[in-house]
Amino acid sequence: MRKITLIPGDGIGTEISRSLVKIFESAKVPIEFEVENAGLTVYKQTGELIPESLYKSIEKNKVAIKGPITTPIGEGFRSINVSLRKKYDLYSNIRPVKSISGINTKYENVNMVIFRENTEGLYIGEEKFEDKEKTSAIAIKRITKKGSTRIIKEAFEYAKKNNFNKVTVVHKANILKITDGMFLETAREISKQYKDIELEEMIVDNMCMQLVTNPQKFQVIVTMNFYGDFLSDLAAGLVGGLGIAPGANIGDDIAIFEAVHGSAPDIAGQNKANPTALILSSIEMLKYLNLNEYAKKIEKAIFKVLALPNFKTYDLSGNVGTKEFTDKIIEFL
Ligand code: NAD
Image 1 (cartoon, rainbow, N blue to C red):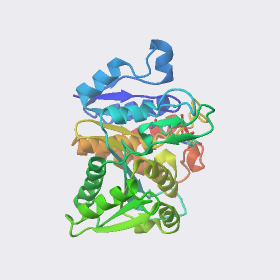
Image 2: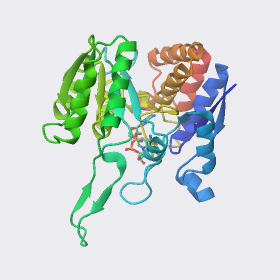
Image 3: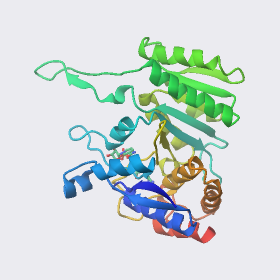
């Protein structure tokens, strides 16, 4: 049995993690979950936002799957998600965006993967007021050659392995000439090593427009942390929303799989969350662990359920609850 760290999270995290465990048990996946949580609930019990035992578990198991964790807006503690990505240098945030049969949206045949740099940019948390009166504030955006090189390489390697012939680099180098300029220049340099893959350059505002007018033209997208955050939510919306958007945070040594969405406090505890995003993230995890047979088995069952007419979760305009949706997947397993 392979041990994996499971961080249930909070809000809908608890509910969708429960689905995940039930599905893995039914599919007899040879994985044992070591449950360790983080966040405000843990802080209230232990006085620690991220307990030492969680770090130890991740460092031992090397692979984790995580539910969403609430981050207070404005004041309060720094995002636990950002802290974990930074601590373990999980520089690739990979978000596949694919049309799913049975989910009615304005767009069909969308198939793209977004590579978002996960450790730099505006998310380094370096902000300060410039005057005593607090009337002016700045945030630092850090882009490095090393950080740009490794995420862009990942994107090209992924394109090569998965038979995509175009990588789109998204930037704002017309304004941010040094930071975004370096990212773009790095993409140009790396693309020379991949003769069969076209490099497309796109300014981020134009990219937003093109994503909603013609999303089918994109294959692999690579961008900096800030733009990647927005573009991946936008792209998730094209194929059915956050409830079905999986993600992965991958470094050289450790990987943490998680859905794109947050803790959805508006529907938490109401049996209304769609567990699909977390289940699809877990399928990516099984592939990463070379447990392909189990990945396929669960994938087949969940896509069968998603294709059922009149069996939709609340986010997809239906009235099927988290538990009922999970039980249906188990039935198909
Ligand atoms: P959110 O993703 O939690 O919710 C946005 C909207 O999408 C809500 O209406 C919600 O009900 C819906 N939604 C999201 N996931 C869904 C699902 N699985 N099924 C059905 N509907 C779903 O975004 P938010 O409201 O901006 O953020 C809430 C909290 O989550 C914040 O504290 C934020 O910091 C945190 N957050 C955490 C992560 C993470 O842990 N990786 C990611 C994003 C946001």
